[in-house]
Amino acid sequence: AQKVTQAQTEISVVEKEDVTLDCVYETRDTTYYLFWYKQPPSGELVFLIRRNSFDEQNEISGRYSWNFQKSTSSFNFTITASQVVDSAVYFCALSETASGAGSYQLTFGKGTKLSVIP
Amino acid sequence: GAGVSQSPRYKVAKRGQDVALRCDPISGHVSLFWYQQALGQGPEFLTYFQNEAQLDKSGLPSDRFFAERPEGSVSTLKIQRTQQEDSAVYLCASSLSMVTVTDTQYFGPGTRLTVL
Figure (tube, rainbow over the protein chains, first blue to last red):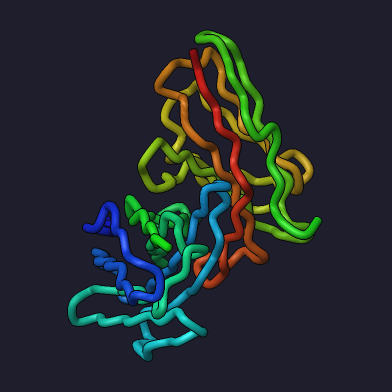
């Protein structure tokens, strides 16, 4: 069964510090997709990135970067020079191709609450 | 509309009441998902629609939960005889196509249900 683990429940950093959010996943599928979502206090999940299992290139988008390593089943997310607006709960999620009924639902981790202190 | 919308945003129900939660997906999106998010947890899958067809309801916790999408657009999640353990945020998501493993799911703001 697929599983996503975000071991860090809460992290606090001072503004302008860099912070890395960890995500470890389990799947028996060879083709799968990984996602990161941000959930600010308003509650809406905001899509950040999607990565497929065949693409291990790291990606950078502004202050955000993602490190995907199949060898360790990890898909970590780094925020550089954090800002107060980055304060939110961040979720890592997994979608498999072989999901039985074909619904391709997302399996989420429990989330990491990031607090950026001014 | 520009994004997924859900109504009501907040719902308080007395135990035993029936509730109906509405989701308006992004226009043209074929796939629609419902998730339940308990306090301090990640969202958990409830059910999936492809147009009007409910293809997967394996995540529905009991037969008190029922979802429909009769015209392939708006969806309603109904909970009968609500219990306190049903208190959670109910999230709706939609994605563009039927091949949803390659698609991104876009989420609505959720409905926070509190059962007293």
